[in-house]
Length: 359
Image (cartoon, rainbow, N blue to C red):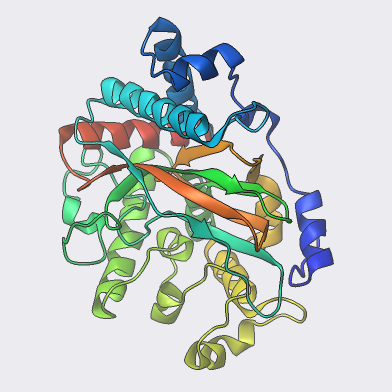
């Protein structure tokens, strides 16, 4: 992989060397398509939904439900998407007892590009990162307060829900690559723990405590600043308030004048400023350059027009590689109004255990 990804050719080089996961595309037959189009809830649909929900809960990357290779008119595609997604959500609700979880369809998202680019690359993030990020489960850390799963006061709206699983339907793939990279946050936390302490975490509880300490500091900084998103550096243990607060999402998005002056020592020739700052934060918390860490941890999903992409939104982060400016996504998430309650704590504890086992 090349270090500079600010020009179209170099962005294409990054995507050409991305690790695309073959097993992420789930089996989805023509027979299933017709059943979901008609709203069937028979054993065949339920078994498939269980299979898909198991994949969401166990894989270190998201899943793709391939609808792009099936000829569907717009109305039928919409029915398949809604019924298919609802079936997976119901399977998860049944498994974990998450009776307050529901499916949230949001308005279409276009692809914003900067500085005359026609491709966009996004850094790792949780969807809705001001109210959806990895925290300790009270099953492992009883002192953790559910109120510390938000960075703003507890005001509920359709955009402030806690997103347990994130995803989207590809309305238009655009002219660029259609790659969604996933990153296992618990694996990254383990690397940060090893870098700070010089040893592997001796137990899941030790890693949860490490995460809790990092979050307590970062949440204090974010709240004192009036709110914001919990980013990867905050979870991994960055301490400087400016590094906690700097907005690092789109690698080509310009930094503020204040941030540019503060972080100028991190800038690398040929790299976008945001990527240089992100790289410096990753090195400080893990001891590893971001390019090297990508090669070790990044798992990409390829999706096409009409496909559904879903992923865990708490133990995983995701990004976007080389998306064309004509790319349009219809977001779909499995959400709760608040991240609290016995069922949620058990779900979160199981997610931690599964991620720790594969880390």
